[in-house]
Length: 275
Image (cartoon, rainbow, N blue to C red; front, side, top):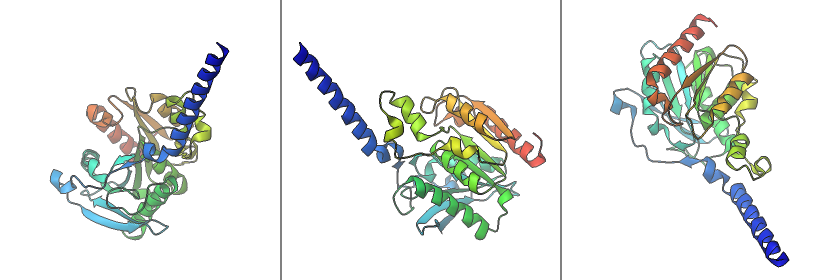
């Protein structure tokens, strides 16, 4: 009996070590899911645009689109999530265009037509490159720029807003940090020790000093709703919480009326400085 118990213990330990090793070494594949094929362009939904090539501060050449709005009330820097590329975000681009906001959406390194390999530090540099492009090449004032980040892009946008104060920050379906999310998915593993990526939205948002809108769905099964509440509690005033319904990736479509009205209300309050 003792020998059987020892064999069982060894088996459990081997499984535990194996799962820990998998989580440690497979993190990049779990976090990043880029595609290179551009499956659609803004002109296919009736929007004019220009393709933009620009460099991150470390010299990596990146690709993006600038979609102008008529008499724009600002320009959105769109930091997308971990999967696909800019061509999978046309619905959001159309929403911003309808709100009289121009959009500058870019692909992180390793995504779409952008050079390089995805990395956490690289994604922060890529967002800085997008900011610098608008300031230096489009002649924008920082207070004309609205930072928007969805899911993983929420961490990227928050970190950029910590360094450069924009007109406003909007983060949607974002997690507090990779280690927090991993700890909820793999309760039995020492995720804080294993995680090589931070994407610490919670730490960044504490140091953001501009109006903040947090958007999240109670029905999000990928990033639990409690992450959004923690982010909202940590954010400085002025701040607004917008609860939507629907899945992690399609909540803004499922609850389009609530979502659109919430964005309109927040942007109006930002413009009028009423909080």
